[in-house]
Image 1 (spheres, one colour):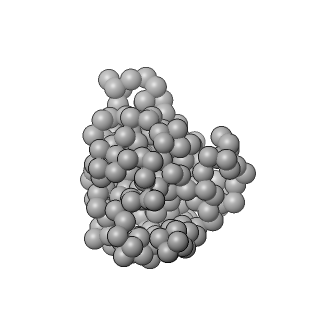
Image 2 (cartoon, rainbow, N blue to C red):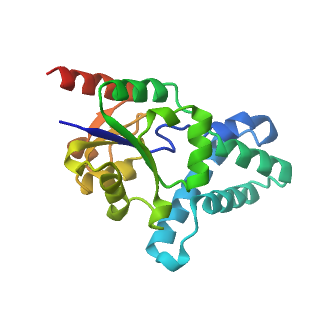
Length: 227
């Protein structure tokens, strides 16, 4: 039986493309592609940071700024006011519509709930506050504690340590396939929330439960609790 459910934040609970969508009128017409490039570069920087060792660690906000600077320069967006607006919005990204109801239901079922995120603590405090989900979480855990990014298995161990629940009894939910893979390797019961309908990667179709939305997770766990 699952006793706790741990969520990724960016892309799973929070819409990472909302910042550029909100400021689309100030950006080139292909802002969606630029937003995707920002996200891709952001993740690339985290992986390179981890691979090159702790002495090269930069927190996630610093990486978010650096990756935005790269894509804005690449697409010749030079207005500093646009940069500032995008970063301000990114600090308070909106939650997906299914996030808060799902967390509320899981809490009503007596399950522990938490976020395990690359986001540094101040980022997470702002994001959780803006989304109005702080009261539905037992913990908000940042990789900043160990200065190593996902998908290092040492990151996922933070959830076990913080919640006091074994990985084998913890559900891990992520919309990022690479993150879901990391959690699966670490021994969690993984739910890959495939919001974009992407092809399966890393053999996740065999190692994780694939769901289309967090509402599907809510229904599955409610059914399991009644069994």
